[in-house]
Image (tube, rainbow, N blue to C red):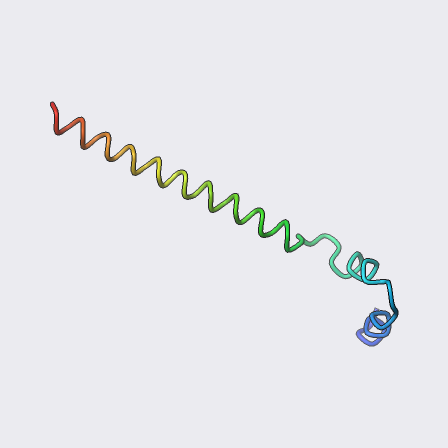
Length: 65
């Protein structure tokens, strides 16, 4: 479909979902994208905190040998 026909279809009331289904088929929604990024950041931060805790524990063990 050409750009003009997409524009003309967008002017018709009530077909936003149909347009989005065609135009964004196979793409990640903004909501899904944000949720995925939150999960990735949480995992990254949890792993970083775990590494910091391990370093602290190793230093503490060396100190009290």
